[in-house]
Amino acid sequence: MKYALPFHYPITPLLRKHGPQGYSKYAHHRPWLRDEFDFRCVYCLKREQWCSQLNDFELDHQVAQCIASDFCREYTNLVYACHNCNHRKGNK
Image 1 (cartoon, rainbow, N blue to C red):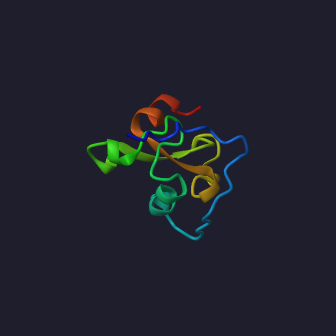
Image 2: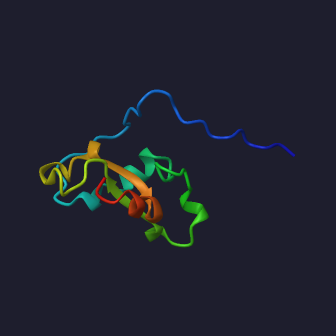
Image 3: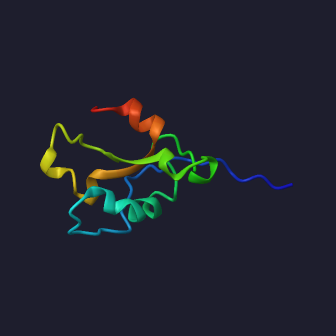
């Protein structure tokens, strides 16, 4: 039986594959972010398929909305995260 190699975090920053613009709500970026982050949580690497519901995953703002509200709809400020990681991160 062959085993998959363990995941290694990349050394270089992620170069985004997508860059959709013009959405009025940041939630509209969800399909793009799911693909961008390979259907995984950016923090703990949990896969969507390991969860019981799609709403176990959320869109997280790298720079919190309370710090930079004008940056909240920017695609480059959004990451795909599971609920637990997003909750732990909070407004940090």
